[in-house]
Image 1 (cartoon, helix red, strand yellow):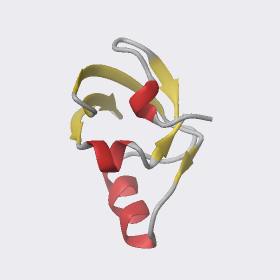
Image 2: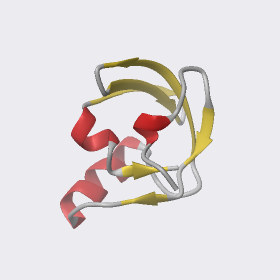
Image 3: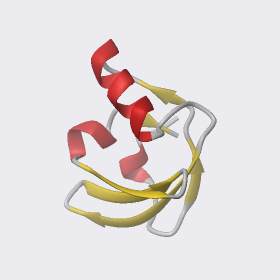
Length: 70
């Protein structure tokens, strides 16, 4: 398992685990980041990312992205 920040641009990955406080986990779940969900990495810039999840394009800062493990 590794954080989603390690994925390459254009790579389709599956979320294995979400870490953090219950509040952070809930916030990410509302955005569509749940275990088993497929995520496509669109762009990366200095640790910040843009990903497609559940037909939505979401921007994540480095601290949130590092809580999503693939």
